[in-house]
Length: 518
Image (tube, rainbow, N blue to C red; front, side, top):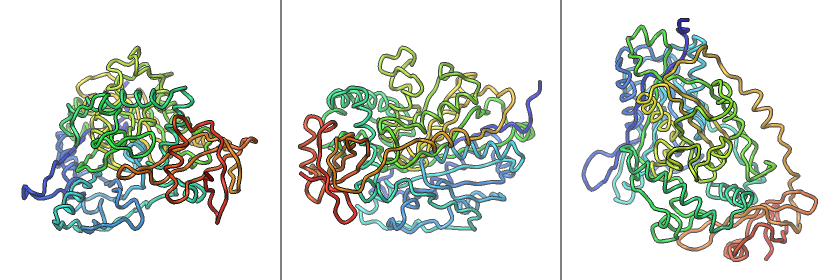
């Protein structure tokens, strides 16, 4: 049976990483230069360059981190229209220009959306591109060098904005904010569910990350291509200082990168018409996208129902009962817990390698956000680009990409192969979204109480405790989120030695905030 010409297919990918030093006198990369160069590389990668560019009906730019935070300083100005400027710089003439929503889920979610639009005949080809130049910004500021990032052209037809908040007012008032103030709670809860002591979990995280760093060390696109051993990763030091219990510096996504990545999709019919080689074609099989509740409203901090559901759907819609046919993975890796939960959901025994050749290193194609580089919302575009390149070299293999946005808040997954699906079909996320929405979270308290700690963290700066918070449960099962007063984070850290979870804590409610009483 001949293939449906409407079947969507990835035909081009591009990545660009720049190690820029202001002292060299070389021109600094900008978010726009990296977006445009990655897009050019993706078009050229297809083998149909200009001809493929001529049929692109939609260009999507993934939102940078500076454009994702209201009021964030823009010391060198900003491109007011990232997708339109890519269009102008590359001489394209699409019908649609889209500036994406916020979240690391976006690259995979946009591939899913683009594939469905191509299959429906809404567009002939789609260019997805994104970048970060945070390293250049920091280096230029430190060197006292002025840059100009204000280059902009065209009109944005669809600016999707920031989207709904991924934290509730209750979360923020009582201590949650940045990822390093939220993911530690998930990590601590997972550690306790697995029965690990703090030292045992530290060793496990370091074992995982050492494997990831070995992949980054061999990746020419990695921003930090240094292999780190377990001893270095598990030991606090000047180079690996505390960030937020239980995390040290190299446990956390590193945002000081100059990286861009792009993906081009079209239909099989258009690829045939343009003469794009079958060797270039990689197909999206199953996929999914789902949004979870805010952290305080999730019934179990040690699990991610969104991760479990999206992986289950991506496999099922690929015709797979489990992950046994998947040969390549790129699991989102902003913090260890994100990888650990995904591996658990997939049934991957990465420590012993009994069903995962290569062990920890087999869970990433790039080296992960701490070592390859945390290219903001666009990281998984690199994961997808790397997946396409690897699958081309291993025809018939299946690969899975998991992308994560927010605080395990938005999950997108895709299964890929050079093997074409028998009959490509769009996928509805309605059932898994309804299941996620139906979670029954605990009753939340804003009142004085005595409770038992279920998770906690203390953030650090320059070797000193800065802020602390606890999730705790009252005897009747209600949850109360509380934070330390100013200058009292050290008391929470002392209380946590050797274990905070399970200890009783007194909480007082003052001026709309739950505060830990020592």
